[in-house]
Length: 193
Image 1 (cartoon, rainbow, N blue to C red):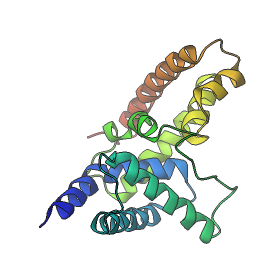
Image 2: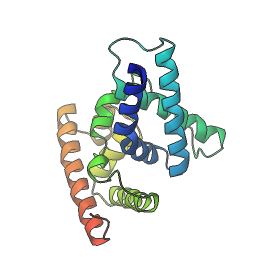
Image 3: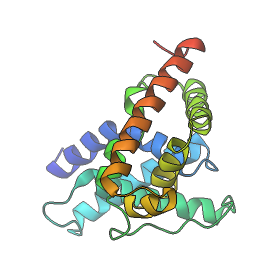
């Protein structure tokens, strides 16, 4: 196995659950099976790009893979007529993909690699429900940031905060609250290990 194959296989295993959870949250119209297909297709594209020399040196692999996968998932949802409303493809100017996916709900802490599809779907359902039950401004901040892909500046203006640092601090507190709620819900529903 050459270096390209090792890189692709390593990242494939490392990002699988995080990718599935993130895309499912971003595009809930796609089934887990659809997202798994997209994930495999994204890695075939990454492999082809590597072999064809289309990847720049110093590429941030996580951002690169998520960008390809997210674009493929959006295209799949549009092609199958599953889009409730149009979702614009994000650009690097609009969002910092690496930071967003690094902090995006830390679902990897909540979903095990060994989870079966039914259990994963139940956990994702709990996640969606718990976000809706967060008090304001938490629900608005988290939905705007993670689902709507709004910048901290946009959110600051929407909720009338004085600085992006204040929004960032509140986002952190909201995320901590959400993680606690999810862990408690998982425990009550026997979805913990």
